[in-house]
Image (spheres, rainbow, N blue to C red):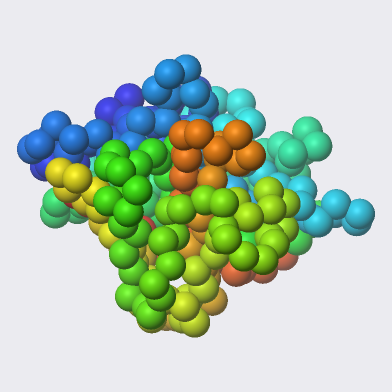
Length: 246
């Protein structure tokens, strides 16, 4: 299904809720095409739900049954109930994702209700999965408010190690490396704006990962805003509002 607001158009997969496509309707520029060439890079959210001996256990939207989708005059709401973790265990966790047309943006917000027995940690939302560079080396830029000369779209990372996928994951921590919670993803012909609106500061980071991993070519980048939260059993949590525009 497509949701359009002014110049911006996004396409969602009704079976998974994945964000598949982002288009600038003024120029015709496709900023994201997560299903091109038969790929399945689309994502929407990821929530960590660690268990003993497996801290990396998580909940991901694309590994669930199809969501309930309710259209509204100003957008769409997607709902999942009793989600499965990455080990295919039921969790008692419910998620509601709301996409709303405001001015020339589409705003994303998510509510997580923990009816289960395990703590939930870092929630990443919304995720842009499968972004690919349009220009040559150095022509596509990830711009953010901070001081760094690194090319954050260049993989493998030329130094150090990371948890899993060595040298293919980066984080930009807010408010340490990032002085304000926004980024601009620009290349030949135009750019994509990703702005986080919060009424109070939260410890967060921008997650950046090369989905192509070790085969390297072509680089396929995943980006998502991760809030370092703790959602205990019986609690409900609401994400930051993220504004997407072109």
